[in-house]
Length: 120
Image (tube, rainbow, N blue to C red; front, side):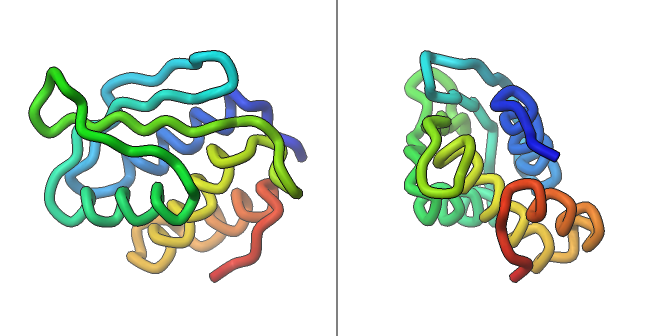
């Protein structure tokens, strides 16, 4: 089953929302790039920053709102990734949430299968 870029963005936002101390406050497309605004604090900030860094996704503090961060991820296909770095961010979030015991194993494995990734 393939996922559209919109459904990939929705899944990534849903994964972020599963993180304690993280809330998605906005999402939009700017050309081929997904832009996600999150309010994040505590351990979630470190975990999300790490996931963004490992997925080669830009994450920066939002200039207007304290505690808000802007994640910008390319959805241009690359290698085996239909939705580029956005998909890679989703994969890293699944791995983190599985390890943390927040995401049920079957749900994580389903997403990893769709995104052509291995279980951690």
